[in-house]
Each structure stands twice: as structure tokens, then as C-alpha cells.
Length: 222
Image 1 (tube, rainbow, N blue to C red):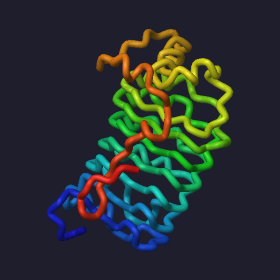
Image 2: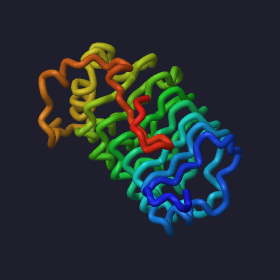
Image 3: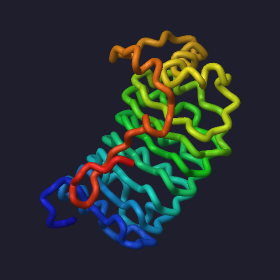
């Protein structure tokens, strides 16, 4: 990764139990935009250096590891646009994740979440894709998601939600966000016009087209 002229630092699929020492500073020095650490055995982000060295990072892929939580310092990744956390054992996200104001894609499917942070969505005004599917202990969506008015793809497959009401959940992403916006006493007025097709779309796993760069810089659909 050090010698790769591409803006990607890749230590995925290396059976790592710890983040290699110094890689965060290398990402900073070589101005890497993407850090791939998926399909390892990581349970912590410590060891790689100071997370504020990753302030230029726009994509972080940690899927397929052994994380149960993330550190509060995740908020230092101020440029982050895409965060992939699926297939871990995360029980709780730190409230500091709500400060990632540039986030457009968050995939935390197939974890052990019991709740989402209060305030998520309030600063994520650019969030367009949120996958929280297959977190069977998750019971409620936070009202703050009503502020994420660019959100057009919310995957809630295989959840047992008690809030919002089932008729709202059955309506799909746009209906859910409009409901939550109303619960906050704000108008639902996304900047990007929503087509009739988007409004009627069923929230199925096929709708959730999350992409990330693999080692060959190809685009992979999860």
C-alpha cells in the first residue's frame, strides 16, 4: 500500500488481529482516501496510530471483522463519506459517530445492535444509503433520522421494529423519513427530487447496492 500510487491503503484479508503500527500516519503522509481492512480478525482500531491522522479518509471498510464497538475518536474522520461495518458483532455505536457530517453511506447490517445513537441523521444531511438490516435486537428508529432528508435507501430487512408503526414501515424509505421528519416538527423537503418509482420502491435486500473498492480497484456489489 505504501508504494501504490492509487489513493487506497489495503490491508484486507490478512488475518490481522491488530491494526499494524503506524498505518494511520502512512495514510496521512501518502494522502490515502480509502482504507480497506475488511475480512480480518480485528476487534479494535487501536495500534494503528492516532485516528486524527485519517482526517482525509473518505472510505473506511471494516466489514467482516470482530468489532463489538467503535472508539469515540471515530469522529476525527471528518471527511468520511462511506463507512462499511457489516458482518461484525457491534452492539452499540458511539454517539460521536453522529458528528460524521459528510457521511453518505453507512452499512452496519448483520451486527448485534440494540439501538442507534440518538441524533444520528441530524448532522448527516448528506446520508443517502443506510443499511441496518439483520440486527434482530433493534426495536426502534431514532426520530433524528427525519433530518436525513437525502436518505433514499433505508434497508430494514429482518428487523422487529416497534417504531415507527408497521403501516409506516410498509410504506418504504420515503414514507418512513417523512413520518420521522413530522415527528420532529419539520417539513420533509429533500433537495433532490424523489421520483414516483423511488417512493413506491419496496425496501428489499436487492435495493441495497453498497459498493466498495476491492484490491484490484474493481467495484464490488455487496
